[in-house]
Amino acid sequence: MKLAFFPGCSAKSSGMEYAKTSLELMKKLGLEISCPEFNCCGTHIVEEYNKNVWLALNARNLSLAEEIGADIVTTCPACYQNLKKTNMELGDEEVLKEVNDVLASVNREYRGNVNVFHVIEILSKLSKKIAVESELKVVAYYGCQILRPPELGIDDNIENPTVFETFLENAGFEVLNFKAKAECCGGPLLLVDSDAFKKRALTIVLEAKKAGADCITTLCPLCQFSLEVVQDKVPVKPFTSLILENLVSER
Image (tube, rainbow, N blue to C red; front, side, top):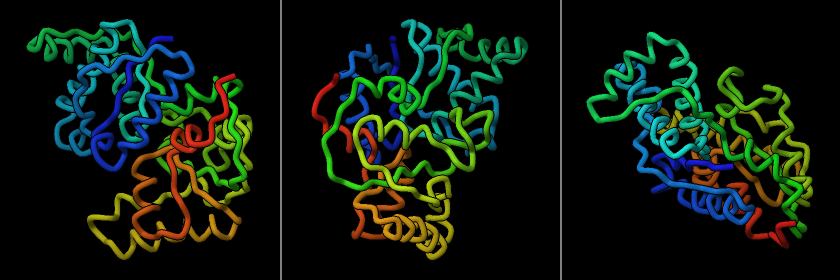
């Protein structure tokens, strides 16, 4: 399987460890990974400001992957949804033509032949190849955006997802029941109401402690940052980092 890795902007800062370990793990598992010169996905902010610009930004990224015959994989749920949503909207031939008229100014074209995946969707299919040895009791924290809205999220139950826990258990971790696993970490509140942000993030951490967790493992770089910055009692790890730290072998 040939994949183009979309790091997202956080890969240069708070999500650096997640991006680095995701690349390392996928390569260890024999996946063919390329790293084109992608641009920012624009997030919802650019979409709200100018949807045509947002579509063109993401269409350029899709075209870069298409050019090398690869699908896109990313660690960031926001990037995942922006790319996936753009791909869906470009299924409309009229919209695709309008966007390609813009892309022509930078000598690019998108034909609609790329799929977009989150790294958990790729790695969960390869869990039988991964074996870890660890006495850690972990909780799997999805956050909210990886699941919602359902048409843009990973294919799982919105309120009670299981793909993440199943993956970790198959690898060899002891995974605890965690009722806050699909709740929001409060990350978007950080710049507008820091007190509300801290309260929300600490609620997640306290639920993990109540469950008896030695570690919280995450799918989202923003969730990882949010749960780390408000406390120092419970370690918070990107799941790819946790796997590599405890990896026995690639079966």
